[in-house]
Every structure is written in C-alpha cells, then in structure tokens.
Amino acid sequence: EYWIKKIPEADIFGISATTLDYLRSIKIAKKIRQTYSDCITVLGGAHATAAPKTIDSIFDKVVVGEGELAFLDLLKDYKNGINKRFYQKSHINNIDTIPFPSRHLLPLDSIISYSLVEKGKPATSLITSRGCNHNCSFCGSKTMWGNRVRFRSVDNVIAEIEQIISDYNIRHFRFHDDTMTMNKKRLLELCKRMEPLDIHWRAHTRVDSSDMEILCAMKRSGCDEIGYGIESASQEVLDINNKMINVEHARQAIKNAKLAGLRVRLFFIIGLPGETKNTCQKNMDFIESVRLDRGDGVDISTFVPFPGCEIYERPENYGIELLTHNDDKVV
Image (cartoon, rainbow, N blue to C red):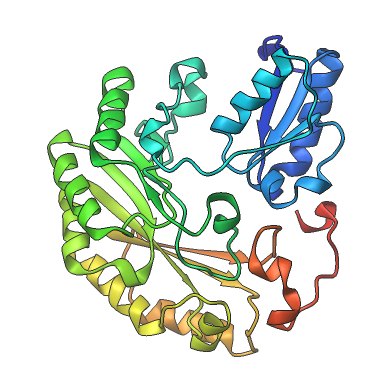
C-alpha cells in the first residue's frame, strides 16, 4: 500500500525480472492492475527472455531479449491499436547508440547505494559491455545477450562517469560487465582515461583474463576490488561445467591481484554437476591455501539451474534430473 501510491498513473507499466524476481513481479503487476484497471502490463528481462511462453497472463505483453528497440515497437503498436503479445528485436550492434540511463527520473535511493562499493560512501552501478563469449553450463548470459561481446567505446563510458560525478558527486562505481577484462587493449585505454577522475570502483572478471599489466592498470585507475568466479577447486567439476579454466589459473590470478594491491572476492558454487563427497574439502583447502587478507571475501552459493542456462535446458547431458519446473519450489 505504501509504494503503490508512489507509482504515478500510466497507460503502460514495464517490469523487469530475473527468475528470482519473477513471482514478485506477478504480485506487483496484480497490484498495479488493481489500482489502474485499464493499464497494459509488460514483463521483460532475463526470465521473460529464457521462458517467454510460460509468462503469467497478468502480463499483457512480453519483451524478449534486449528491450530498448523492442519496447519502442510495443509503444508504436499500442498507439496504432495493434495487439501483439511478444516483442523481440535483434541485438543492438553499436551500444553507444543507447542513451545513458535517465537516472534523474528515479528516486535517489534507487540509484545511490551506501554499501555497493565502500560502506558509507555513495556509489552507483554501470555497465560498459553486453555479453560473454564463454559457455559455462550454469550461466544464462548468452540467452539474454548472445555469445558475442559488444563493448561501449571508451569515450562513451568516460562521458557517463563524468556525468554521474557532475550530477550526483558520486565517485564510487560498481561495474556489472560479465567479464570486465575481456578486451585487454580497450580496458587498458579505459583505465588510463579513468586515472585522473579520482574514482574508486569494483568489477568482476575471469581468472584467465587477469595478467599483471591489466591488474596494475586497474589499481592505478581506482579499482579497489576484483571479483573472480572460481566456482570450484575441483578440476573435474570445472571441466564438466565448461568453465574453461584450471585451478592453477585461479591460484595465479589471486596471487597477481594481491601483488597489484587489489582486494579479491571469490565466488564458489556448491552442488554443481560432477561434485563428489570430497569437493567441499577441496574448496576449503583451496581457500585456506590462497591466504586471503582482511577485507577479502568469499561468496558461496548453492547451485539452482534457472531457465536460460545449459544445465536447465539439457540436464541429461550433465547426469542430473530436474525434479520440478515450479518457480515456487526453486526460489
């Protein structure tokens, strides 16, 4: 009742949801429909893209994949009285053509966080690329963005950072690229351009894209922490799940990051195909052996196959069986 009064009346309401958000998005759409009975409700995002035919009828329309151009088509059809349920467009090749987010239209607490980068410091997030060219079994990125990585230009990224600094006096940033260091030449140029901006930032990347030149450049440009998707210290588990790294890659990347002066955050997944009774002990031994410092972190998640990832689509290839497709059970 509190937040529904803060949503102004409109003809069309768009909601974005991952699988984890999907059930909540249905509740939100029902609440909006109760308040504005003649409105159109639209679902987009990762879950709508991975499982469009399963979307609840509370949503009049479904946007599959990238939403910018598809939503424009939806608006044109609405104005012309054309009724369709599904909208999808090809990926946008030049993502510099996408305007910066209209942050000024949102409440400040929706764009500024005091825990996103450094506790107590105002921070916001941005993304400088779309997609990942790897094919990890548990990841749905390719379903949303495709297998080809599309990068914003360095000029475009710097312009957005400078705009945020100017408009909000924010100097702490969280980059949400799938793999921040995928294009070494571009990253080195971006880091060089960020050096004089006096900013602090965090990002995620792969352990096989983390040589000393990259990590030192990141540190000089204001990077305080790098996140690595280790997933497992079992080479068998890594191989079965198409991670395309080895355990020594991970060990060396952590060592390089520490030498460069960066904090590290390690991400592990418990329950991946290929695990045995000994895998957890291997993970614990690995974490102990890399000698993390105060300020470093380890995030451990339980594996759940969501729509859009390879294991969900072809579980038999990984020797597992999905016991339910009911979102109530998995979230």
